[in-house]
Image 1 (tube, rainbow, N blue to C red):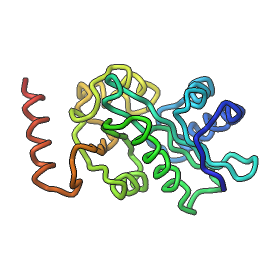
Image 2 (image 1 turned 90 degrees about the vertical axis):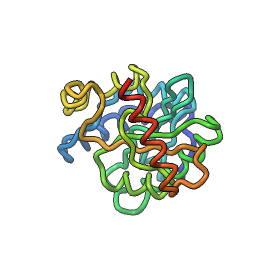
Image 3 (image 1 turned 120 degrees about the vertical axis):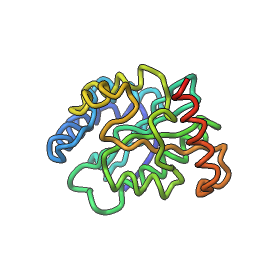
Image 4 (image 1 turned 30 degrees about the vertical axis):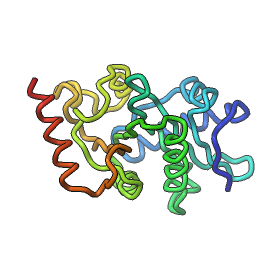
Amino acid sequence: MEILVAKRIHVKYATIISETISSSAQVRGTGIARRTPEYIQQKIESGNAIIALDGNNFAGFCYIEAWGHEKYVAHSGLIIYPHYRGIGLAKKIKTQIFNYTKVKYPGAKIFGITTGLPVMKINYDLGYKPVTFSELTDDPAFWKGCQTCKNYDVLTRTKQSMCLCTGMLYDPALKNTNDFVGRLQSFKKAFKRDKK
């Protein structure tokens, strides 16, 4: 198994990646935003994706989106082809994209939103913490990406303050990510911002 930064030669996998994301959403019955092959291709061509290959077979994928003038970076579209699930590949891809992001976007807060418990566990192990949506980017383009999710109505009804997804954030400025006092202070700041 090879896990690497996707390059132009990997564009040929864009359709199967898009189809795997869509079929996974149907099987899980949860909200997963759909991504077109063209959108996947753009992520690959910009050097903002990690792909896992088993020889010439697509095995897994995840991409990066930068928001708020690169102050926030999201990992999205983590998908494992069904044949390769249950072998720890998702964790390997997430670890690689996490480390790649810290180099490509130094100092950026890294976040994700998910309904998947396995992804939450992987994120937590990498140092992410659950946060309110107010601690994530306020860039409208990010939230527009949720429009294809079946739970988008929840997000719009709550004015982007909550949804069925859990927001998780890695803040490189927090030295000890398990620091309870630091997290409490972060929540207090977010609460004060929300009250304004």
